[in-house]
Image (cartoon, rainbow, N blue to C red; front, side, top):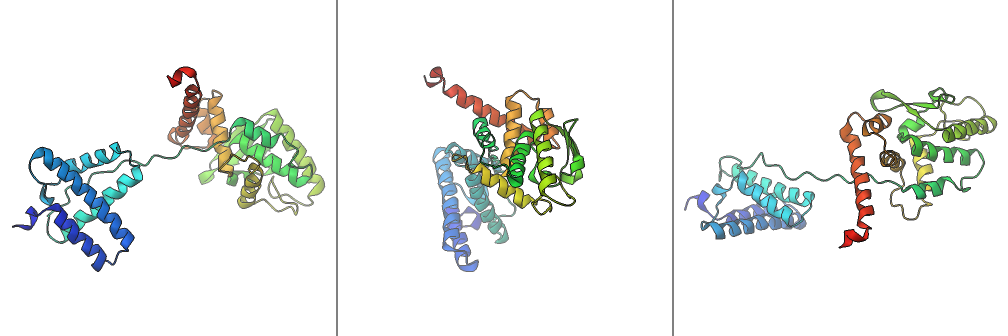
Length: 307
């Protein structure tokens, strides 16, 4: 019998031996390849049962592989799992080409499902207010500075690297505008409200009294040196730890919270894009999914939603 007419499972067995004995793959890796390929073979058996003709490697094409992907997705497999199985199948067919069993790859152009990006994690308003409107920060220089760091990140949505780079000249106190330098040295202006203005003024007053010398940046340490992004991260994580239900406590969570709050309160998505410094609406649009998910949760609490 010509090689191309042999059963698919036979070639799977040969390929698995190749991985185990020639490539010296680990037992775990070999088992993963074996399970993926045997699942594909079982799918072919099911198709053959309805079509009446057994499948061989020579009959497999892109349409068959796409149907297999759809079947996997119907079983609620994650995109990552489906793509891993597709990768196993791709490797199997590359082996068949190298061995001269088939002449060309039958489904090189087939793409697996796109991995869904996790929704941005944000803090509920009552929780962040509970952190900011307390006396836990203290009234000394570091307490005043740390509270302002959290407040600035929350009210402006700047990145921690942008916050670390703010100079005194970047803050227009009377005009209530903050200039930040973002990625690729792109600058943008962010307005702020009266509350933040008063906090800026108070911080400057405390800093001038307690920190001697020139200040290279707006936010500094007690010895006058500029804060690093790592210190800002520590300050945020330490203070957000006061929210026990919060699983993520990074400065970026405050940026997500700023964007989500703006959209929930009716801000135009294009305006939020400009405030965040995004190059396109695609980066900002993910926050609309967050607001939509919140709306769904609210509706699902309605008695009629449970009928």
